[in-house]
Length: 67
Image 1: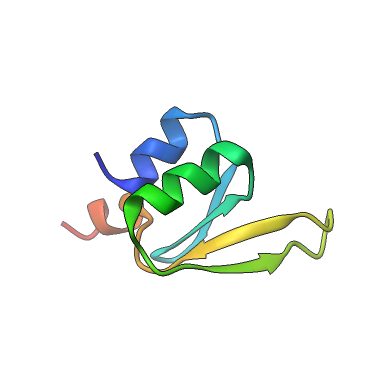
Image 2: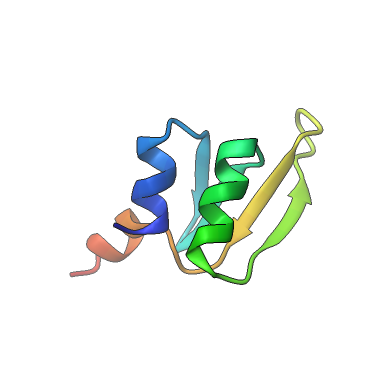
């Protein structure tokens, strides 16, 4: 399973911009991100001032639409 699928199936809030996947930082998302072994960045959501992950190139629907 992909990191996108794992986060979605865990009910983690996700968003995207083109192929970049964003997910809210939670205990569950931190574990999923850690297990993925991917290099990610965090940012502060300016709307609600919560911490989110920025996971480049991992938003599966963007890639699926290009097949």
